[in-house]
Image 1 (cartoon, rainbow, N blue to C red):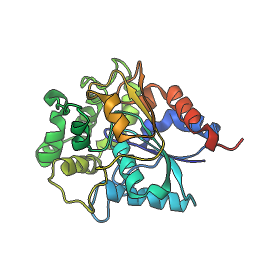
Image 2 (tube, rainbow, N blue to C red):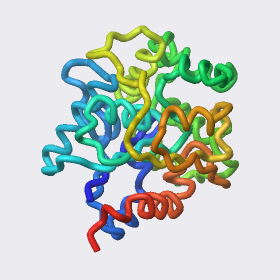
Image 3 (spheres, rainbow, N blue to C red):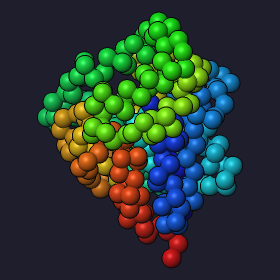
Length: 276
């Protein structure tokens, strides 16, 4: 069964390192590509870094492997790309796996259901404003490879997106290495320019409707970015969902923090799709 793993920021495909082997052993054909501009991938030839552009690339990856459909698992930005892909190219997606509290933008539906609006946490999300609206000034402050890697490493550390000591120095060296390159960090900031409305889209986003595919949703309990009323929102955003399940001992980086659980969960959720 084809399985596409889609990373987010501050990650690259390296965040999936500990789950690829177990999932392949379970019988999946696993691919974990770097998004355009990230890790080892080429930069965007058209300068677009948005959901439509990312999903065009992912469809090309599937075509290259001869895949008509795949289970698509996404984390962070990758989860939103997965949501967009399920709505934009529903025939290419078999099932979805969401590894945080990412959801379609359904504020009107949530309000109609009596679910209070989500309240942003300024101390947590200030980085979005700087990366999206003060991109050049921030990059100027991060003038050396060491400064860039330290900045990215902070998302795994004192920003408290995960339990203390979830990542040691060797982990951080491995995960932040691609971001030593200023051009890579600039490409990663492009998504935040999209979020802040300072970058043109190649096509409208398709995250304004529920995902009708069967879905598995896992959320780390120690993720400070998690919103309120997740269960109620999930029931509307993913009407065919299993979950959300709360994972203890995990924050925002579940594929690295709890890889065995992630692999087992995907295997159980998709067991009927696997060849005997």
